[in-house]
View 1 (spheres, one colour):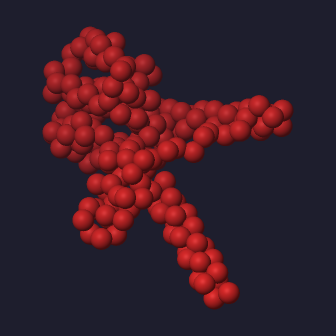
View 2 (view 1 turned 135 degrees about the vertical axis):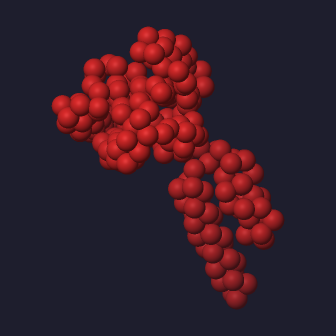
Length: 199
């Protein structure tokens, strides 16, 4: 059975182009994710990995729609190999059912990762140039109304930290960074207050 996987980065992007490309290759079932390829938390990808069976073929429009770094890509390829599932990428014209195809997929994944590293380097260089000219001040820190209240609720066990993060739309890294900053501020104020009281 030929199974298609489609991914777009945001809910606003359309999937029709990718779906049409896969239908032309005889795909019978399609799994569609609307999420960044940088995250492994893609529900439809997980469903597809549970669905595929020995002898199936997974078809994508391009490697970048399937995985965004070489390690992730090769991990998925290993799982396909364990299940004896073939992989086809239309854009690159490669089929892992053949020895040449398996070799080329490894090469393409490495090249895609290298290109992204170049892009990051160019972005950093651009920021440094803009900063030297006084035109770059960095991103404004995000405002998260209700953070202190939800942090207190999580510390009291009335809500989990994960639930609080979801309500605020905040990443785990930002949550713990702001929690540390708030703790430092409170400790400083408490210390200052104690010193004033002793005068």
